[in-house]
Each structure stands twice: as structure tokens, then as C-alpha cells.
Length: 228
Image (tube, rainbow, N blue to C red; front, side, top):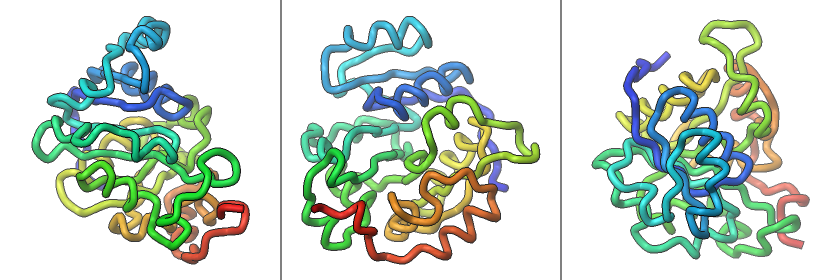
């Protein structure tokens, strides 16, 4: 188990949908300083801010001096993010992305992803910074309600893909603090192992189960997750 970082962090969240909104609730409840933004005026997040104590901001302000940045938006909207949106974070701050590509259901065709580029590698290229993939495969209600203390039976595990180092340690610590067992899923180039349609996606495995599911994954994108 990686060392847990017992500090209050400034966390910027870009996207306030099911996962972004849930992380806003959970991380605020844990005592972190959360700033949350969507693609519109901060006033549209007034209710979420009042509920959680998070600060609603413009998207360009969310990452400023942040210790961690989370991007949780529809995949099709990734190219619309302003250049340098996350580069105002503190040096070394990890950038987490939770996005999934749903070509038939929502996003339409994205050629690079259809041609085999891992979704998170594509996102990181648009963000202009390295990224970590986590939270993309867990049902939002389970993220909200099923966190458990470390060592408790039935604790759900979550794969974390990205480069080794202090940034990954911070992401591991955050996952642990939220009540889930982080499992190292390798570098970002291996993040295809946790994309939609893979054995780990949408499953509430324990750490051993996550490791086994990641190993079972194959690179080909399932038909239901390819453009029609």
C-alpha cells in the first residue's frame, strides 16, 4: 500500500456531472478545499456549492494553484477546453481524468480513438499535460455511497493508470481516503485496459479482482463501444 498523504488539499474539478458532482460532494465532505466549474456561468452551480461548501468558479479558475485537478466531462467536449486550462495548477500537481468514449450513445466518432489511441492518452494530449485515469469505471452512486475504511471486507478497488512518481502516490492516497483500494494499472499507455467494455469496467471488484480483470483485457474495442 502506498503512503497516505494526510493533508488538506486544494482540488479543482472541471465538470459537474455524475462523477464530477459526486467527487465534489465526497472531497468537500472529507475537508478538502474544492473549486468546481462547468462549461457555463458559476451561478449554474450555486445549488451544488451551497450543498457542499465547494466554491463554484469559471473553468479557467478551477485549476489555479490546485494540488490536484480532476477533469470529468463528456469525451466529445475535450477538444473544446481552453488551451492551458490545467497548467495553472501547482508544480507537480496530478491531473486526473475520468472521461469515457461513448461513440454510439453520446460522443460521435473520434477518429484517433477508433484507430486505437487509448482514450486517456488522447485526453492528455489535448490537456497538454500528463494525466492519471481513475474513477471512469465506477457507478456514481457507488462512488458516493460505498467507500469503506481500509482493510474492511468488501472494499471496492479502483484501477489507476499513469506515470509512477509523487503524482501517482497522491492519486493513490486520494482514492484510499475516499474509501477504495487503489490498484496500479500501469502507465497511461496501458489505460485501455480500463476503458468501457473491458473486464474491469463497471465492476465492483476487490483489489485481486481488479488486477485479474486488467490482465484479461484485450486492446480491441468492443462493437458496442465503436462508432456505428
